[in-house]
Amino acid sequence: MLIYTLKRLGLALLVTVTVSLISFMLLRVSGDPAISLAGEGASNEEIEFVRAEYGFDRPIIIQYFEWAGRAIQGDFGKSPYLNQPVSHMLKERMGVTLILGLCSLTFALVLSVPLGILAATRPNTWIDRIALTISVMGQAMPSFWFGLILIIFFGVKLRWLPISGSDTWQHFVLPTIALGYYATPAIMRLVRSGMLEVLASDHIRTARAKGLKWPKILFKHALRNAIIPVVALAAVQLGFMLGGSIVIESIFALNGLGNLAWVSIARSDLPVVQAIVLFLSTTYIFLTFLGDLLNAFLDPRIRSN
Image 1: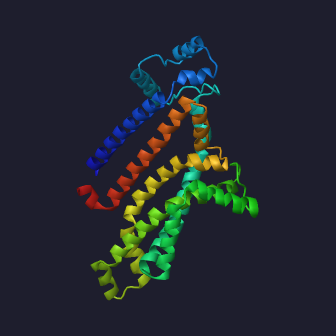
Image 2: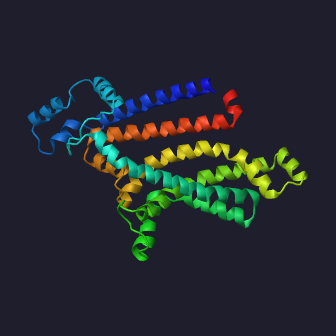
Image 3: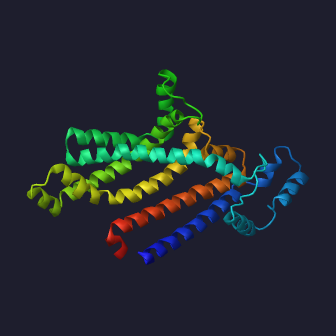
């Protein structure tokens, strides 16, 4: 297990460095940051002054290593527009995004796992078809479109829930449904296929022949084996939701990292965008690493392979 952990940790660190390098390069080559900071109508002298002031006139690889060295120490520089430390801005917004991601994952698991079990225990019946229809709808509808439908129906027509802000738990209900529903199909289908495979195995038939009660067979013997791949998928889905929060937070005006990223991209606030990309990608990589470890812990065959 130690060797497996070290291998996965080394791979995670390598991917983190690669992602940070590529994202840094892409942000720098997508446009001249000195022109964006100097503003429209700035003279060549003003643009050159900004370029020298922020170090944009140096080779890009040197800029990257200087930025990476400060980022390791938690220093992401200052926002040139707000004149605030980027790390302070991230701390202020991080809580909202994490709450939204965890609530969305919980919603997706609560909806998809029972649906997957029901579909597997009643294959090719109307229950199975309803579960698959719900799955297809979740996969077909973009989360931003579903979010707008929720706003119109529950916020504007019925006035049951607020449609913007992040002051109370009620502000998180609609964004959680919009973001969590999009992750439901993948988990539901994995639970269904896993349960179908396990329920057709010899040890389940033996358990039924011994006269064990069906709920005990279902939840103790079948679900425990079928749920192992879901652990890794749930970790990956949480990372995906944190990244997908950029659109959902903007639609519902949640004061989180996603909304901050959206605003910062619009005004070319590179230090903030770079820090958010690094945070979200690192979180995604860490969750994938954690999911791999949990899978290896639960299934010895993964460690041996």
